[in-house]
Image (cartoon, rainbow, N blue to C red; front, top):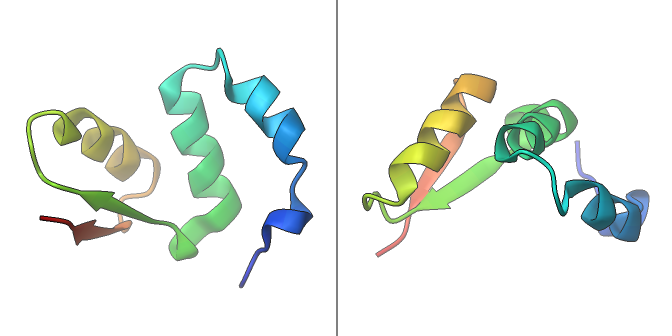
Length: 67
């Protein structure tokens, strides 16, 4: 499954997510992209919360380490 930016109403999504709870955004991404979703992380202290949210929404998410 390959999705292109043209398939989304980016202005609408930006407006909807501007004040959205971060978990809602992560859940939307997980349900929209499924196993195609990946995230990057430096595995620093700030990354821990987002990693936790992402793995709760999509336990098998692929995480790419950045240095």
